[in-house]
Amino acid sequence: MVASPPSSVNYPPLDGSLFLSEMLEFNAQHNSDVTFFTSIKLVIVLPTKLDQVTQAQTKKSLRS
Image (cartoon, rainbow, N blue to C red; front, side):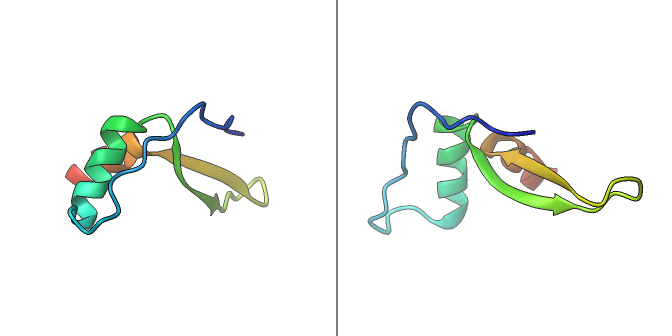
């Protein structure tokens, strides 16, 4: 899966007013379709596969 670049990204304030968890919450609300990170997933049949995780998916997994 190849992600297309987002049309715009809303950055959280970087003045120290938000904790890391609040920055994740901000990104989940304002940048939910932006890729959060890309990792390599090892698959038995195929050598490697790239997975992309959005801000919203990260927020959901942190609450689980």
